[in-house]
Image (cartoon, rainbow, N blue to C red):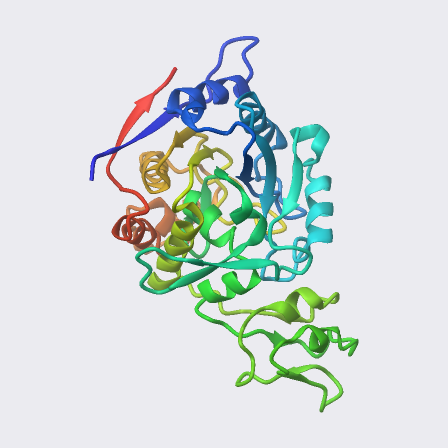
Length: 374
């Protein structure tokens, strides 16, 4: 496979030249204009940030990509899927409210926001995974698959499970419906916290497996009957139901790559990564720790595997910032230095497996040519 082209620019700019103008220039140079968007629905997959988190990408970045799409005659919308865990984005109403509080709305971004897997995270479509080894089909938010063109806009940062959260994490996990997220997390089954259960029985009404009973007065999930679809998590208004099977291992990484393949295969795609505010953990947290590395720049490519590899390589070349989770770890007596910023920040993570498997199944290549734009 030939090397993929990855385009890069740093955050330096002249007086009176906004960073957003530089981002437009980068995307044009990377070839976004070659995509036929005229009259086409264009899904722009981003992350609206959890309430309390301030590391997510500002809405200005989304607006920049929206303007590029509109210039090409496209019909853009911003999108994400509901979360598997309880929080401020576990159903579409709360998700939209969270997005609005964090500054995302049609006025600030120039586009409507659509939560791709619907009100309760159950509006999905089973998509075949080309060359899939772990998932023969992926459960993707319906609106994402309805789009003619797919663009990912990613905040590249650290991640407590997968080493870093890059384009593949944004696409693969982010585009999965609740059932899709359950499948990626190794078919975990939800459980009930009886101290939070209000016995409203809404979860039982949503369950398609008759797995929920109230023999003890509180909801109980029969793990044998449960199919792991996650509908009950979205149904519970009191955060009493959750899934704790957050396995950070090779299988999770491979499934993320396969879900990304399902989303991207067979239609025009373009990918952008903003490498700044590199927090040690995901933007899904209701907080963000201090950045572990300096701000680096903006990357764009048609190849999400090459894009993630280029971003990771750029991060690994940086000097850790003081007073960060990464530098604190490195300064611990007897610390086993891995010479890998992601692994030294969160010692139990895997990240190379995601890129290796993405390359193996034909999603992209880890070999890239980095083209720097001033």
